[in-house]
Length: 234
Image 1 (spheres, helix red, strand yellow):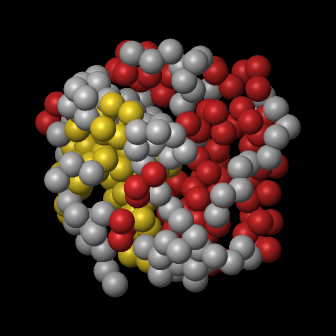
Image 2 (tube, rainbow, N blue to C red):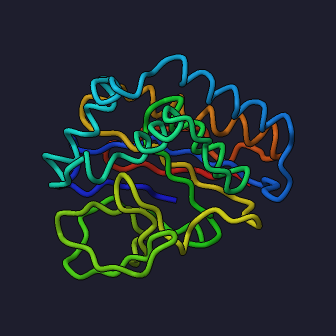
């Protein structure tokens, strides 16, 4: 699988990419619940709700929303900030399915947006990060189909199936389901964010999925800034 970033976006976005294969996403091991709860307690001790907007990593994503996407980040919050604010208000992390919950735990731990995609839903086709076309359709999780504008950044297959609106909204068509076996991991970076955090967060996801969901490493995390071949081994 080739993963590329369009020329017009190079230097403006970069991602960590890895894969885990053969997971059991139906059963929820008690040990995984314990790990996720420990992450929740960790972030509660590290962050305060009234100062979250001043955290350097959160600030980088907010600036990206304002200056690159034209989105007010106080109205459409970065995905990881929205999750973390929920936790700091005393609510629980959403529980959807084991693999998705691992991704959400990684997102609040490392403060980066995490995208998880069912590899079989797009047949391992080559992927590209690019600007959307005006009027291009997108099927967000939990919402009706919408049309995109040319200022929005998407991750799509080379033949046009959109997996993700960068860096905050995933597609209903490629989401992780209980029957999902093979998962592509994409951790979203913006200028100012330490590149190693993207690798570390992807590795955290792989470690938990292999330990608790019976998966195996499909591809070790790599940083993609232009064009890279992701060798997914069965």
